[in-house]
Every structure is written in C-alpha cells, then in structure tokens.
Length: 472
Image (cartoon, rainbow, N blue to C red; front, top):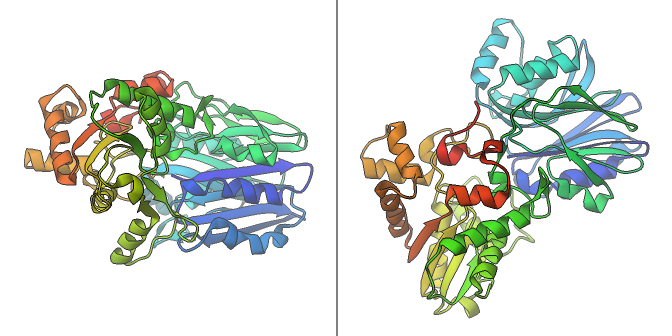
C-alpha cells in the first residue's frame, strides 16, 4: 500500500504538501517523493525511507521549492516516484498508488512500439513511469486517464501535476480511497482524510471510482466520468487506515470498535483476566472487544518507535528479526501469570505472530487467546501491493492448507470450504494454526460480521483476499 497528497492554492503550499505527505508515512516503507511547479520549472526530490523518517529526509530541501503554489507528494511501498515527463501534452509529474497486475504484458507491447523506459526500480520497470507513458501517448490528459483505466488490470489511482493545475484520479473500482478537501485558499487531495485536520482543510467528498477531476485554486471539475462499480478494499478499515481517517464517510477507528465487538459477541470464552492488543492496528479492535465483553482493557504490549522508524528494515535477516523484536515490549507487570485475550488485525505470513507469542510466554503469560479482526487470508491480493510476493504461499493460511491437503494445487471448491467457518476443513485449519503458533485458543472474524462492522454493502467492498470475490 502507498499514499499520496497534493495541494493547489492561492498561497505557497510547500509546507502543506510536506506535512500532508508525512501524514501518510504509515502507508509506505520504501520510497518517498515530492514535486512542485514554480517559476515555470518542475522541481522534484526522491529519497529512500529504509533508514530514516520522511521528515528528516525532506525538511532540509524545502527551501528549493519556496514560492510554489502547486505540488504533489507520495509515500511508496515500492518504486521511486514522482516521475517527471516531457511530452506533446507538455511537461508533467505523476504519482500513482495501487498495483498493475499485467505490468509485463503492457511493457512488452510498449517495447514492441520501440518506446523506451528510463526509470528502473530494482532493475524492474517502474510502474509509475509506465503509467506516465500511457498517458503521454494519448491526445489529452483526459484520454490518457481513460486509457489507463481501460488497459491496467489491478488498480491505479494517480495525481498528475501540470503547469495549469492538478488531475486527481481514483482507480476504476475504487479499491483505494481518494478524498478531496478544501480551505479558503485552495484544495487538497489525499489518500488519508486524517491529513486534512491539522492543516486546516475540511473534507469535501470522496472521489468516485474511475472519476478524474481537474483542480485549480478556484474550482474542481470532473473531467473523467465515474464508473458504476465501487469495491473499496475492506482492509483499509481493518488494518491499513489511520484511526482518524474516513473512507466513504465511515471512520476507521469506529469500524474497528465494531469489529472487536462482533468478535466478542461470538466468543464463548469467559475465563480470562483482561483484553489486550497487538499494537498499533489491534488497539481499536481490542477496545471494541473489551467494551462489548465488559472486561478490562490493558496494554500488555507497548510499541517503542522513537528511534526505530516503521520503515527501518535492515538487509540482514537476523537484524530484521532483531529490529522487529525490539519494537514490541511486553509489560511484565501485567503479563506475568495472566490469562489474556489479544486482538490483532490479521495473520499474513505468521512469523510476527509466532515471535510475539514467544515473547509473551517469556514474559510469563499463562494463557494466550488470540482473536483476529478479519477472516483467514486465503487468496493473494491482485489489486494492491499487500504482499511483496505474488505467490499464494506467502500467506500463512495457504501454507497450512498445503500441509493439510498434501499438495500445492487446490480446486476452488476446496478453497471455498477453507473459507467457510462452518466446515470441518476450516475448523481443522484453525486448530492446526493454533497449535503451530502455540496459542491456547485462536478465533477469526466471520466475513459477514466484518462487513457489517464496516457498514457498507458487501457489493461495495473488495473482499477478494478472503473469499476470492470482486471485479477484475
């Protein structure tokens, strides 16, 4: 997942873009960039975030952008952005979020037309540059946006910075949120509405799926018509989103309270001392569970981040494990001899959960009862960069299924059984996971309960990673 922010204003907007982009740091761990148009020049800067915070990297450069009244910023989990391009449409800068599932196919077709790529990310084609090329081949920016919608499989939301204004575009099925805000001087667009509040912008509305708007300091005009289908990623509320953000008018933290409460209503576990969370995204779920169950909530785990940026990830595997271990500190005054229900957002690869269980046992926890705020993740995401691997066996659940079935290839019917909490296959899978991880009990959210907790019709949510449904 990645996030972006842009601003166009009647006054200088450099600090707004800087701080607005920084408010998206929880969405990306690899790269960040900003681009501005000022004095008839496009100026950009890109830095790695793998060893430092966004603010530390970009603050010394802010004077370079002085006077700019239009700019974009991005926090990326993958490639270097923004891309700047000179084309027959004029010079423009582009940032994107999402995932191009048919990247290789589009690349091959462009190479056959003798179109070259200059920007590489780890010796691979930069998806944002590919989108910039697709746009530049069209007669207008509007036609280029339509071409991206028509060609790209997966999802692609984007911001296009031109010398005349900003284009903001939401992906064709609305997988990722794109929200519009304003103040008396101009407009902002962002992934996270929580970036508006302290910068004195008010939320106007969510862009609709496929919609493209052109923004000046005076007005916002829809230039690419919205599409008929909305399927925003349900994981935005469960895990990705910042607690104070709103998507489709629904607050993230409030949805997490409801998720936790739904888990508590289905739970028949009564013999435990208190409810706790795996920070940070487990906090809201745990509070919701605690309130519903009328049991105390306590912070058995605390997260130490002042000198360990979320993005910091050493290349050495042993060091990566050490850093992950150092960030979460059990509070032994609470854990020793306790029977605790823990709330976590999900189980993806399983390694972090196993490490946490080891730490809790070492800190004296008597019983560990894990409650997961979403169903088991069975299908790899085709729409967002949710996982660094495209293999389904990157998911812990799929590895358990492989072990249980004794093969790597499963029919859709078998996978549907593992996704259904009423089947014997599902119950056996959860029991094996519980035993492997070393938990006293393990329960997952029911899909219907999660959908109800979010508050949108299931047809308006992407739940592909749980039940293999959704538009392609």
